[in-house]
Image 1 (cartoon, rainbow, N blue to C red):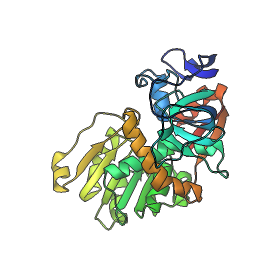
Image 2: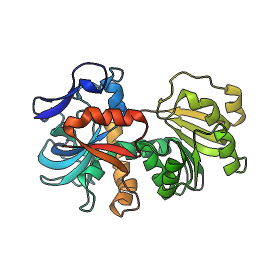
Image 3: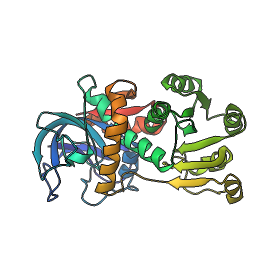
Image 4: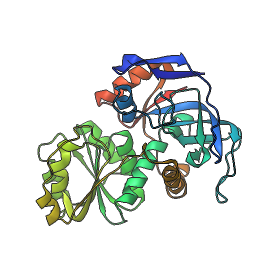
Length: 332
């Protein structure tokens, strides 16, 4: 089969379509699916893997790709959970992967698959598993509750555009940031109660003004070190800062005194490195609590552009440019 392999750490030019061995069912006794990939989501983790700083976990294919949508070609392994519908050959699914999505076929545990309804295209479906699992698991980790206030740093990104919508659907008041008036307006259209330009020097002041000086209960942050001071400053009493990305640095100064005054907490998580059982738990919760919003159309996939498998390098260039709104998807 064809896959996009990384020929060496470096720029987008190191991504090349090559023939690779067909995936096979592993020794795992749990139910597994062989899926013909129709579309694959592109994530910032893929860029880091290409650069040689974010290797795939043991057992995952060496080529990138953390989410796909496609058609089940074969099913193998033991029984799935008694309360779980087993995908059948011919079913359309969207799946979360540890790696290997930039390819024509993947093998994945059935516990990581979501059923794709007829009205959702494979391109749209492929943009969802990673973002939904990330946002849901981190809001749960932070103990976010209906009626609280959520600040989404980077509301125009793949994770952020999902967080804005899901936060509102879960009953949170959502503030979100984006860069520039046009992107701010589009984030507001996604459902943000307040959309702010993160390029402004007084972003923290704007957040505090929008909350009558109280601050926010939860910050979902992809920025990292550069946003640390402002993120602590805008926390309400008993607020939680959840760092899920390091786009602008991994080392910063944390004012512990300011954090203590707020009785605040800093939570950091990753999704890819979680073990199979933890990922299965998260995807089971997504299937039960979040996927119905996709099925009934209340949560809309945001796809910036679709490119061919042989345009993976161009997709990485676009994502690195900072101009993408939502997700990029490769059509296989």
